[in-house]
Image (spheres, rainbow, N blue to C red):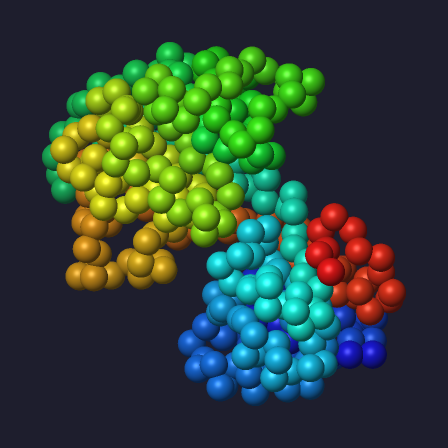
Length: 324
């Protein structure tokens, strides 16, 4: 029926076996991002569907060189940084993604990072590992005002846990006001500037589209009360890196957690121009995309992506997670 190119190594063999069960061949290429464009183009030769689960970027040169390619299934939600949608549309290629599969996992990681920052867990552990006493006092999270920037499904889940679980006051800023009927907890919609000036905890949850890069910068960070903490489990680039590093260095922010890093996940300290990777003493936590790194999330994403390709070749009618 067709052949599928699968990149990355995060989809289990058991889930990929569904291709064979439905008459589709598949080939797995790990670390496709390390291939040159010419090498990657060759991998697409004779390919009808592409399950994008790696960090490679694809655009017109690949799409136009492989006229059999009919559908791209992205393993995740925001694919703008990896797939050129305009080029794919021009080439007549459909794009699917996996909405809703990461909500619980990313929300859980976000709350975990928030609690760890507030109680300075990593900083305390680092001090103990050095044989030093750590006795910096903290305050309960329930006494905090939490500002959520981006009130989509994940933002709502994080806000719900912190509100109902800990009693936090929740402020939020979003492109659209969320109807109170959607929520079972109290929130207040505020402007972006108000969110930064009134919040003890700022959680960045906006989509990782390139147009959102840098929407939190020097001006926004200048509004925060000294000692506020910031958690970013969206793309690191949503928050301007130099501005964030300066806010940590001068003590304006009392703690920062980032899931992922600015140097395309290069965690080599010698190449860390921002200096955040070595700022544990300043209550900085950097994790390698732990938000989606659970068996549950990966299996949900893998199954949805595989299903979208199988359904496509079964004359599937486009649904909300498929863009013709």
